[in-house]
Length: 535
Image (tube, rainbow, N blue to C red):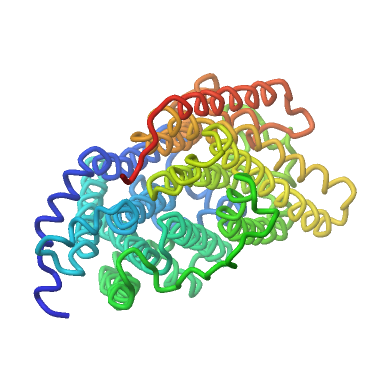
């Protein structure tokens, strides 16, 4: 590497910062908001004695399996214990998407080729994007620390926790930089990043299940707070290890970027046959071929997740000692209605359904990738209508997202039934839990289709909607909002606190109808708007 290879970093950094002037504040302040929501949750319990409440949580086998042991029995420690997974997820997603948007996505749209026409080094775009992600993560870490200090937390522990969260975000920025080198489209890079996030969450839960101090806490960024231990030891020396660990994928990304052409990937796409097979003669078959690899990856990952948690759920549920807070969420004894044996597995299904919605949204956004790369124009120039082309991708997205939930229902039902020794009854109970999540997932699919069809420039608003539904869940658990406001989220109609045997089917039917209306409006909008061309 030479100095001229990095020429233009400052200019590109300012350009990227200007392009992200609306998204960057969301990325910076959302972790602070989530931290304050977590603080509000435990502040509402102060009348019961915060230390006694945290002690009760610490003894709860279900909560400990998800969040691990409590490290510090005060408000600051409660924020670290309960809020780390949410903060890490937000910073990880923000870092990944920032890197991909300013590197691989720019190569797909031709912006990088225009930029390279000026005095710009080959590493300038990658470096500027990493610099932007690093500065954003540092700023988010400082804001997180200041918010905890404002709540009465010690400055040392607060800034250590903020630095830990910054390190988590920087690691996933490196994962994003590595992902964009491997394949030639941004969708695959996002899939690699999301898979890394999912793997990190699963490893953190397994670490918590093992007591919180296993070797996994050094490997997965989602458990790094158990290494630094803010407010419970303050092991700041661990930040040096985090910095080195986070630098590894970024360094590999630099090495690989020198080994590929602009717009290409290190792993070259396999050349297809000179003539397409007869079964590929329709837009639907093409949409399936484009989505197939992503779907298989999600299927394998989600299946492993469900199999693991379905296997350990009966043992956790029968361990007893459930805290009053968990068993009386929303002011109702929902655990008695649902059944103690289903508490852990129903929560696990609810969480994974939120990520299946992410898959459905990214599958719809494949339309935007095809349009930006000019391939949609080539198809629409033939005897393929706009509605037929878009509906083919929507059909694949809806069927594959439903297939994910059905497959998880089958795998989870079999494993859970065998673990409990009552396969004939438990299989259908677990299977129904998963299938009931299809209408809420399709609502977010419909929202994404609506935005793409009518206002393709603001499709990122769909992620805001997804985050809003997630925040509603957190606010309801914190007793900041009541159930009537929680009903704004479509996932509340198949909530884990509702006994699947008594689940109302009519609201789910109306959700299906609403998803059809949203996708229909998206098709109508795409039919009547201009299509992006590369002419």
